[in-house]
Image (tube, rainbow, N blue to C red; front, side, top):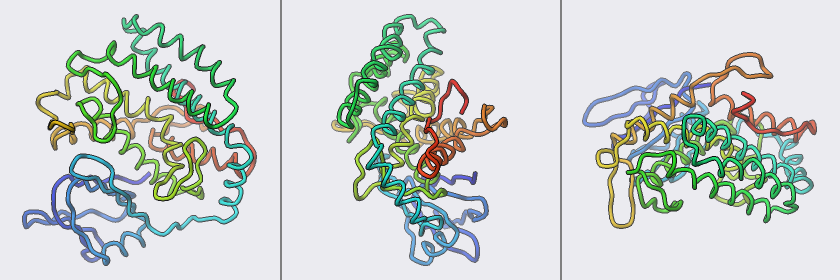
Length: 332
């Protein structure tokens, strides 16, 4: 997998010969095209069509975030792996077996939540035993009974609410959690969740760009115009493992501080530049961390596992093979 470049300062991005140049405060920083798959612009960055043409030819995806750390959009080069045959079969799978795929995703979310919470239960957080019990028993029963997408989404919502109820048992007191608030985040924890989920979503956008899958045909989320809804689907099972594990460890190891790493206003809360740097480094470290893959019999990174889930879905679409999303427990 290629590398990611984060740009957190204001400046200008342009093409210089066969490199990408970022200019700020009168100084140039060069980004090599080789082995770069995506660029994150986390501040105001000026660019031109000459650069966009160069990025497109180099198959480099660029993700844009606004001042508040919210995801604004993606520059998406022409799809070089587009396949009419895959798109037709993917649409047919949506029409005929959407619920089966959606259930697999929700069950994958549930299983990875259990693995994350079990770690804390084994390390003395006995208060979360009823939460684990609910995820292991009640959630499974509800998911088994769900027969349409509306009830499957209802079960997913219940699973997330159950997971959220563990936070005040796991996290330090200054990171209290009352409810999930997204736009805009209203406290440090919600700010970290929103920013982390956006990073993971965009990582999934890049991963799917490098497959034959159609980004607009999703199964759990409603397919819609103006967003890559399949990336929302495939990123869900990785949230407990990548985003929330990173948050738990940063908070409990006192690497992120409420007073030092956030900017707060009446209506919103966001990570400041130093907070974003610490958080991004931790997320990237987790994404690049490797573990043994049970089926491939070799070590793969978490970032590669996102792309592998795309390939698993392709196997279902083209060959009818069972789709089982990434499992932290199974190492695949």
